[in-house]
Image (cartoon, rainbow, N blue to C red; front, side, top):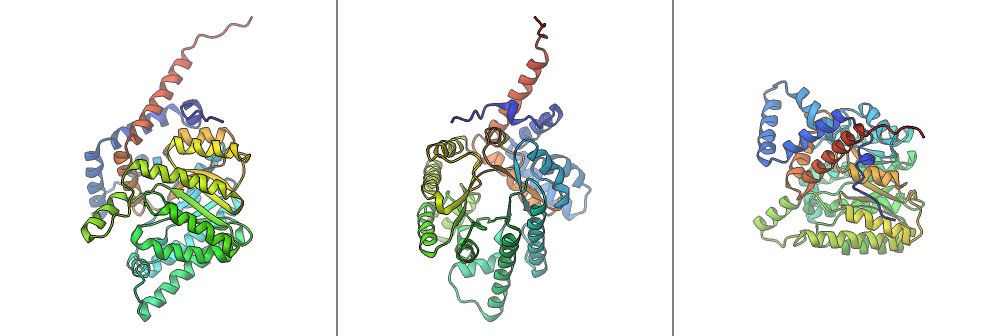
Length: 398
């Protein structure tokens, strides 16, 4: 089955002309790197000096990429998406915290999102970032295999406790939870902990999903090992696959510290391994649930074709397509219209606290080749189509 990702009528059917024009202005702005960088500096300054910029940010970039400031604020966005067949993942996108109180607050918010999802139509999955549960430096030390002192060991046990509490809530409310991937130098501790939780909670069904970033050249081999480990230890493997989000930072650190670059040599290599990962997961679908997180039409079409080849129904709950809220609606809504399981990452949190997330989205739309141009082209095509449709002469009855 071929999906027509150029069908803008389906892609934007929940958007008014005003909303489309507003998105067009925003993406046009994000296409200018200097504007994004100046905006980043000015927004940080404005919040530090308590300038009244929250309203401006909320009415523009926040509303494009976020569902609200609280879980409950996201209700209208969730309802709007499920009205066109697209589900939501509540993503508490507060970052950069370092205190135990902040980590506990984040953990409690994630648990609340899981409970909320169990009662709200259209929220089949949950998610959290490992650095929302513990200090970056602690995860780094643990990943490198360095000995933790007594205080750090107690701190690590609190991190494990937060992961476990979230996993238990996911199990009790039957809402699978994905653990996002982080930078390579803290990922080993995350992988080890998530694997332990899968061994415990994924015996009967997938409750915990780990995330694999295929911009790393070692991740296809890691996925192969994870499949073998799940088979040998009698649990179901849960995986979210993405291309990745930290490439520039990874390369710079590797060069600065003089260790081998963990990143693929080029985008073609990332694409190759990502698609190989899709094929590998499909070959092992009897023991796997997975989320295909991608803004790439070719990879989305590949999974559609493989599902057809393997005789798997588009609505099979073991497989989900995922995109970020506010981006790639032409993929999300056209897949959903064809009956496939689609989710949008729906970030939420106080405007000031989600600024790091919003800045990443802005920088991504500036740096990812073709991303902004594709969004602008699709919006222009839909506005043109609507204008032409409006001026079509009325058909007289025969």
